[in-house]
Amino acid sequence: EEVWQVYEALASVGPQAMFTVAAAFGNVHGVYSPGNVKLDPEILGNSQTYIAEKLGQPVGSAPVQFVFHGGSGSDIKDIKRAIECGVIKMNIDTDTQWSYWSGIREFEAKFRPYLQTQIGNPDGPEKPNKKYYDPRESIRAAEVSTEKRLAQCFADLNAVNILGLGDMKPPSNVAGPRRGGLPNAGAYQAGAGVAV
Image 1 (tube, rainbow, N blue to C red):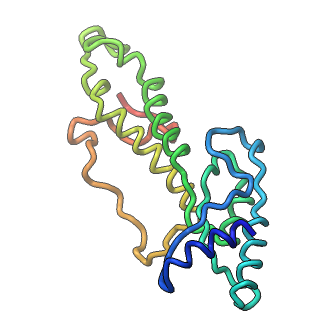
Image 2 (image 1 turned 60 degrees about the vertical axis):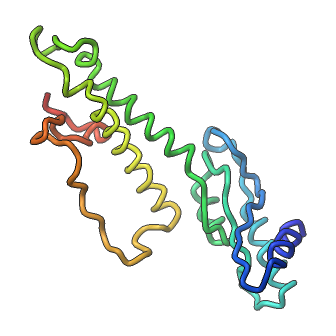
Image 3 (image 1 turned 90 degrees about the horizontal axis):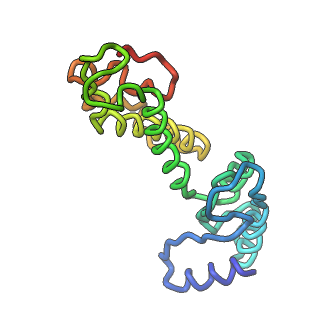
């Protein structure tokens, strides 16, 4: 009934009103271990049924477009069910923040001996380290990590190849070995060996 009240108030703006509803169904903002967030997407499904009845729409109609806030740590089955029940947008900021940081953290761990001084590393006391401490390298590692996490999010949220654009070409505007960057840029997350 609360979702109906919100829907009714927002719909009163006019016949062409477009809006989303952020209904609570066990979701919480923040970071929680998997299993600690107990979603009940059937609340959304029941809301759709109730509102469709109120509007005189056929059984199976989904008149409400829901927004899913606070989904970190949610079970993928619950996320998929929430989408089936009308979720059209899910916030993924916490996950992308972590993936960005994780890329930097893993870059630093992998190249720590090369990040302590400007000159001198395991390859020799006179060897320069500029290509390692160049902030573009760790930022690129963060971007690669985030790209992988976004790809997972898009797959989880049924948002892959839905616009008819086809597969994306690999970016060509990133620093690689020919431009003075580290060889195999972007391999930090895959565990692939980076020739240094």
